[in-house]
Image (cartoon, rainbow, N blue to C red):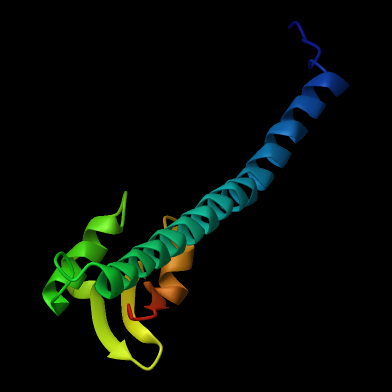
Length: 135
């Protein structure tokens, strides 16, 4: 009977296994961090676009009564100014206030990261802009 010696694991092989375990533990946290940064950028961009659309619609209502003379025209104009977003005209509301022509827009933002969607759900972004009436 021939006895074979058991192969000893080398330190290099053990280090490779340890690196794989460390990588498996760190990767989910790293990916959450990266996608969190992406989602934060998306929220900021969406809010900036929504605010810009409300600001443009308020200015149009105050200055250009041909294109933005009615509430429906103001809503439609605001939706057309939300570049890069698909948003209904019903998300915007135009009123006349003491400050002038005011437009308010709302948008339900959905996160990419499922873990943020569970506790937060859809985050409602709201932007309001007022432009003084033409005198």
